[in-house]
Amino acid sequence: MKRSDSLGHAITVTAIIVGFLWLLKLGELLLGWNLHNLGVYPSTASGFIGVFTGPLIHGSIAHISANSVGLMVLGSALLYGYPRSRWWVLGIVWIVSGLGVWLWGRESYHFGASGLTHGLFFYLFFVSLFRRDKRSIALMMIAFFMFGGMLLTVFPREPGISFEYHLFGGIGGLVSALLFWRWDPKPEEKKYSWELEPEAEDIDEVRLDQDPIGDLWQRSPEHAVATELEADPEASPFAAEPNRTQRSRPIHISRN
Image (tube, rainbow, N blue to C red):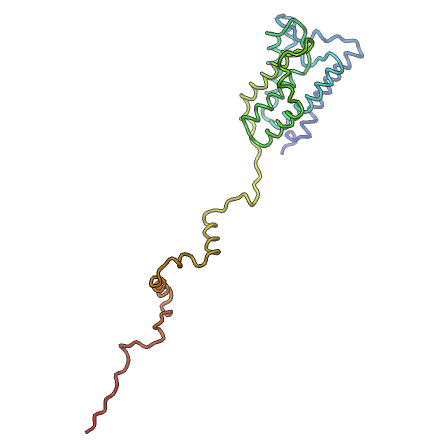
């Protein structure tokens, strides 16, 4: 396995991305920055920048903490399990979630990485249904066990939460699964010795070794004797007796 495809590398890259988000938030708090205007504001030219910058901005420490857990788990699963499609999936989820909010979202600033986390979850969920290999199913089960509630948070729940980001992020994940589920090769399945089927020649040899009698029991006695004589002519029951046609005739002495 290449180093770039290892689980450790996937976790490291994801941690760097999450760390960058924390630096932005800490800079906002410590330096007095106001980055909320970098979120998506629907149907406005100035708000279109949020399509690209919205996932980088968070409203509070609790907000970025919740999204960091999802990004670490789901992002590491994506980078590890799907090395060929991972960046394409991330890019499509990023753009589709932001663009959907800009076109159909409520008139408010929408920001946060929850659109990405929902997109990654929906990708892992649907791509496992399409691929059905052990690795994708295992990654999906981990994601579902920890974040299965994301299937419901795509619907309106609380006024201050952008369900639009969740919804269009999930749509981006589904679209990515439909596009890229064949891109990544399936891992080779290990076969144990008891799973391997012997070839036809090996089966015949095993049968001969285990059944030396063969089908002789089905043959008639005359056929069995004839077969034995063909194989070994000296095995004839008459071989020990002289040929009757070759016996000497008795001598008759005539008396005068």
